Length: 494
Image (cartoon, rainbow, N blue to C red; front, side):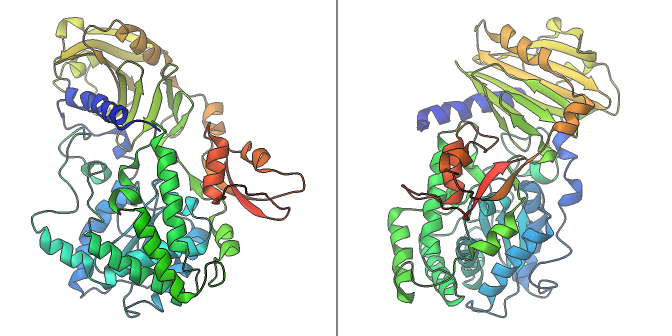
């Protein structure tokens, strides 16, 4: 597991790259991709429309577009939407307030999260759906969030925080003062589920009761809390992960809380003897679910970042880890070296020498500006220095896009040129064949055949070097699990 000190140092490295930018007001390359997806859904899954005259619903409606934008847009898949609607509908019928209507949104994010806004706005990420092993586990999460709505916890929270809006001020990772949608929400700064401990425990109690009364396995709540904690541990040892938008970052979990969830479940009977898990139809509903990076944000494959829609790719040196964030591609390596890649739209077609010296980089040395060509593309390069860091800055023009590569090393570190040259020289346009061959990863449900083992099926996993560990996690396998022919399991593949 990555030590807390190492994670803190890594975060500090990335903030250095941000501090170098002088917030120029340019549009990010990733800002364009989601514009069509940030408006509220026109087809709610549970009811035709949320109550328009309910002031609580109006509160949720104000925040909905920004929430959707901050999580990469809505995930549109009719089969998966019907699955979530089926689960939520069964819970609504036995909830504390059956008259409450809900708008369910599946968020196009690999984060493991679910939350609620006042007025019945419920959200679940596709990442959570991929981790869950059956319908009862998703029902447990949704029942908990519905409980926050029916208990008016959101209203109580707002009264405590009248001066605070859910969308945080633009800080740290933004590149300009007028970015819309997802970049106007600082990652990890959303206080969507900042309920008190008492409110969380009350939602646990109501949620488990709703779960059991709807006919689901009431022990699924404790089971899935364990699964999310296991996944959080898996992520914490992976430098590429960003848990800031995940469930456990805003929903405090502890062994005592899990045991309380089990205690509530015992009111329905012994574990394993009550309720339906709904695994068969659940696996049918998530077969083909997008896993990990979305096509709109590009893909990380080993040491290489590739974006098929933009048609570009570049590679970082061995030993570096790429973190494909919503607002930029960030990479950290040995010895406090960091790389940031993003892009802006340039309709003015100004010279790259003028652009690189236009004030968006703090501490730039104008005398160091040179022009060059990188794999047939016009480019410019310069050096900058600030505080304890030295920077290499490269800008590359491709049509109306200017791509920006910033490399940072501790002041005086002689590796700056080598690392910057490696990344810069690797940047190029993708060939049509490369674009065509680039496929997203998805959850695939397969049937265990005679002779299949956990090891042989895990070997078919794609997109991770820790195939066996992730295979066991997404299937909820206990220690000592043995597969049986005819059993259905999830793998990650194209």
